[in-house]
Image 1 (tube, rainbow, N blue to C red):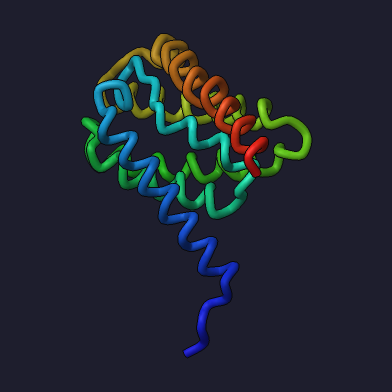
Image 2 (cartoon, rainbow, N blue to C red):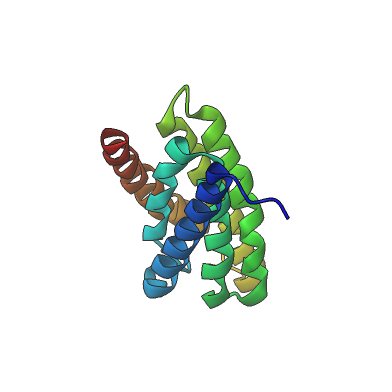
Length: 156
């Protein structure tokens, strides 16, 4: 059996740490991580995606899956890992042009996804739900996420 290279080992470790951090923040702050009005503080970690790349995208997606095990929507919310990963690929694609644009795209896509889930599962009106979500997700992702990005960029 071939030993993993240090770079592969590093990527796996980064992915695991990011997934654990995201899930822990989501679950420990569950009252504000789920529902119509949510500011998922864990989304601040999305700010590291432009710097870390694929390990961060996979880690956050895995963290969403694990964190959503605590979701009041039940197993349906586990599907959220899929649009999360797709949105994070967009964040990575836009990192050379505009980090804020990538974070904003993530915010719109996830707000629409969660709004559709809440409409389907709880019968909440989509447009009103989307409006609430885009504010909360935007605060966590664009606001806090960009602060994390700027801070980590200075460190790295």
